[in-house]
Structures are given as C-alpha cells and as structure tokens.
Length: 225
Image (tube, rainbow, N blue to C red; front, top):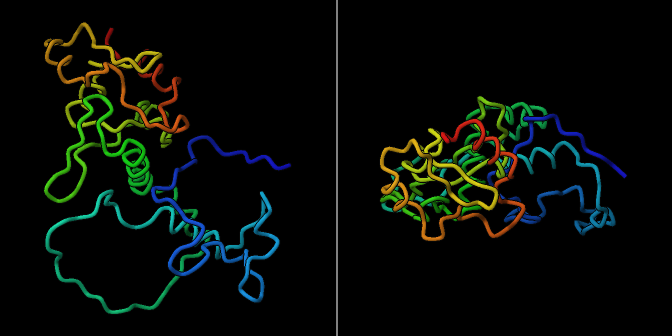
C-alpha cells in the first residue's frame, strides 16, 4: 500500500486530458517490453515512471496552447519548418508547474471543460467570433486568500456574473441555490440574470462540482448579507 502526501497548494489539474495512446503510440512507453508489446507491468495498479515517461505525460497534460475552443476563420501564415526536438528534463517540467501563468491556463481549461463553457449562474453559453467561450474560470476562494487551483474551487462565469460573485452581490447556499445580497441596488435585475432553476448549473460528474467548504468560505467572507 502506498500513500501520496501532496503539499497543500501544489496540486494542479491537467488542462488537457492525457490518453493512454496518442498518434505516436503509448504515452507511457515504459509499459512496453523489448518486442514493443504491453508487458506485465501494464496491469499493475501502482508502478514507477521513468523520467522520460513522466516528462511526456506532464508535457501532454499541461500543453502549450491556451485556447479552450478552436479558432475559426483564416489562419495567418506561419513558419512550418521542422526544428530539432528538445525534450525537457523531468526536473524542468516540475519547475514549470509552479509558474502562475501556467496554473491559470490549466485551471481555465479544466473549469471550462467541466462546465461545457456555460456560465454557472446565467446558464448562457456564448462563443465569440474567434471561436472562444465568453466565460471565465473564476476561483470561489481566491488564490490570494489561499484558494487552490482545483477544479472544485472553480466556477465558469460570464463577465457580469463574475463581477457580482467577486463583490459578494450573489452567493451560493448549501444546495447550490443562488442567493442575492440585500445590498444589491437592483435586486430585480440581478434576479432576471439568474437561470430559471435558481441554482448553480454544475457539472454532471459529482467529483467535479464545487466543494461546499469553498462555497461556505465565500458565503462567510465575501457575500454581503
């Protein structure tokens, strides 16, 4: 039996889903024997990763493209010459994980994918002319207030809904019901913005839904009662 102890604040969801196989074959190539077939190690629930496999998996999971949806329209010209392959060392990939911009990008990818690019408060799914979703990945408990970059600490919100949530004009109750602050100067207009259910539109997968401790923290520390 093995137990992994993760230092608080260091966990990062992959922005890209990493398949067992890609166009080049198995991503975890240490599973193969000398004949290129899956070895008995492939059946092990827990197995060590060599440095090259680790770097390949992390590189695939974090990615280098910050677009969540494909661009549409004509593409600009680009240099398509092949350049020498320089695979980063595993230690370098570990160091890159702590980069704030990288964490923000992968947090955005994870949240928008889980919410299908749909605002959790308004229920609107708007895509701009460039093929990008017009929602942001908002932290429920902000990073500057020790909030982690976890999918369960995130909501997909449109610009106005994000502004109201951050300023405590709307909050979320124990059953995901959306509550309007008494300090909102136009509560009726805010109410009309909320989707017909009156509750957050959350991911279908329970494990991806907002954790109640984060919502409670927001209600107690940000929501203007």
